[in-house]
Image (cartoon, rainbow over all chains, first blue to last red; front, side, top):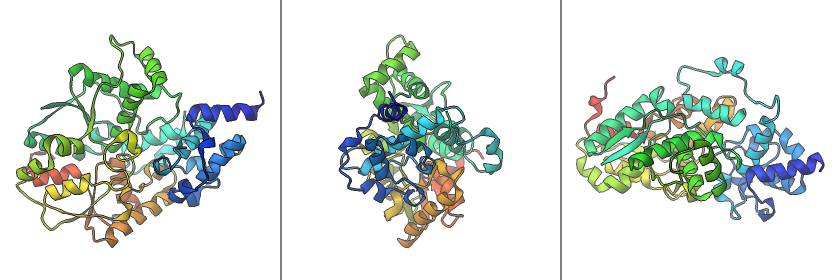
Length: 129
Length: 264
């Protein structure tokens, strides 16, 4: 199997999402608080998966702008869960060698006296393997 | 009534107030929070991947500890509640995750989602009752215009969290009425504060928090109330202190007249 086909299978497997259910209403993008920061928007994300172009998703900066706020998941009328697709693509990146988006060396300068532990553990879990 | 209680990492450190005011309030309301022994951090965010097992085990341990005691499990931090409630749903309804997690755990009796997970606010609404709470208030916070800030973690996905109507919640507004305050309903109360994005993308968090505060101020709120240490941090930090933000437990303890019992 080609790498592209492999990737397409992997993203469906990790996310547990069936992108073919999407009816392209765009509600996910309309409700996304990170829309302006994303190069590939949530509704496009679903199309990329339908077309099997997972490489582009894995290089997208959208992976690091998604907040996991589940607005797109809650409001999708077809239960497609774009947020789970974005997370699956992010997982595919961080599970690879050198795929981490956050390094412990960066932490000290990102902290202030009020930073809650919850922020660090959450970021570590989303940005690293 | 005794409940198992899961405080979580931040309630032991930066959010001690959220925990301490809850404990004295519970006592005043006649129920007991029995802390789970040797609990582990929930991880802060729910692992979304269908193939993620190991990262869910700390929640399974907590859930099973409550099951062993035959108690419902009470949470307080929105993130802990979200993670533990969703893992419990997996253990109840997703056979693949249940099987693999139990293979790791090697418990005498497999865990299958038996424990009931309740947020402290749900205990107030569904077990104590807001009417009873109202009767126990000795120091009503009359005249204070409070904006409930729900954020995302308590509400979504609504089908799993079953906390309240995810688009039009009322639980915190009802709580505010019970302690004598005036709730202010504003459009951004269930929009995200930015969550973990505030670690690396501070400008993004700033934009989001200012939108929330603009919305709340525009509708006349004088303060915001939350159940989440990260929401509180983001709203204070990223919205640069435009509105004071309180944990709901602090206002609860104040209304019940037990705030002074918390040792500072």
